[in-house]
Image (cartoon, rainbow, N blue to C red; front, side, top):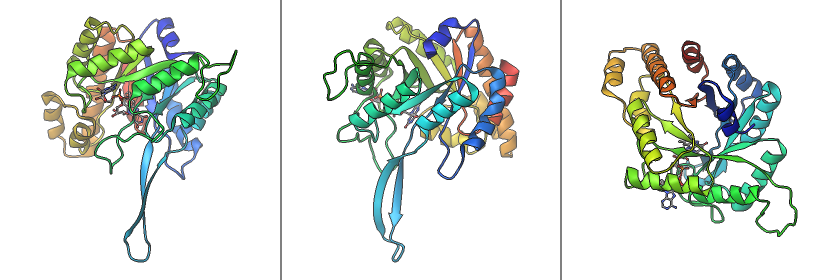
Length: 317
Ligand code: FAD
């Protein structure tokens, strides 16, 4: 079932979460055992991210840089199918512009359609470490909206290089990203929301937000979106802080602010364990307030660790 169908059928706020494909050398059973406990909270769908990674190979003899290359982290498509098969729930692969030619995107979408995947989250992807700004694949897309337009075309049976009659076609439900604290490259909140509106007008059916720690920012974002005529579900993305390091790493990586009250509590912590307790408590409070606000679904960023999400879900759902 599509994400929007799950939302429309829901009688209460839904629980969902996002996982990352494991690094090379790890196996699917580890991933299964990690997410299995979260099945207790009946997630209607699980997101699986897609990543482009950079590899630097050194000359083993003299240590000089030999080769810098990128590749896509494997696993997203296979994991989506494996989870669907194992737990009988829907999976939502993320599809990204970065590192993909339009042909590779088309092939991936055909595979996803064959696998019975009903929804995709459509993103540009972040620049890799050595890029100061996002560089698209030479035959790829520069912005998420272009990738979205390709999915729209495929949903209409229009493929890249063939004029097929009566072609079998996908019917993906399309989600996109939204930023309650603005995307870091956007010159202003207004211009960022204008882009979001264009994505919705082009066919996006729901939005998942970047993580935030101050619900007020989400409430204001939703209000502005509604005023601008963006009327699709806006699913809040939440992540509990689980270590002291994240106090600076999360704002630096995701271009967001932590509220003073949260920082005050974290500054009292002497250990990562203590910081994790503060992070979980904070996320529980955020979740409860968001449910009261009437959000359709809470979407947790697990970042490969399900234990904090379990501890939040058992207090919230
Ligand atoms: P876009 O919508 O393309 O926007 C990027 C920037 O360009 C914005 O500043 C926007 O305002 C501007 N812009 C957009 N269109 C235009 C236009 N036509 N003209 C001028 N300016 C424009 N990254 C991954 O690599 N893998 C993942 O799996 C992944 N999952 C994510 C899930 C969520 C819920 C979120 C919020 C982010 C995720 N990201 C992921 C990170 C995301 O790829 C980055 O935030 C990226 O920098 C922007 O992606 P976007 O889809 O918002 O891009």
